[in-house]
Length: 145
Image (cartoon, rainbow, N blue to C red; front, side, top):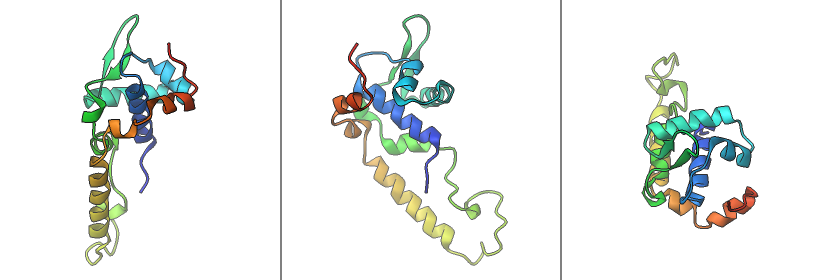
């Protein structure tokens, strides 16, 4: 299974914000730190805001920040909220044209595996990922402002 770029970037944004919870960050700043497109991050930030993980402050001096504590944000919840679908194979979707679906148990096995994957991620919080926030900032070559 592979998570989408949207999910990857969402987790990166949350980690960035968790590393410096006392300040607002801008999309431009985060994009620059990770060397990724601001356009991609606009979609990411919008989705994270819609799902209540971050709050956005508009206007001059605005930016984004975590909405609440990093210890309350479960990684499994983030993945469920931003991943667009979990159709690992065709038969898990609504347009199943596989000729062996009626006799195949692959879908059952993959659903079970997906459930275990998400349950494992539910055991992790954003705070768990941020045991060393300064290390993240150092890796991104971010100096305190």
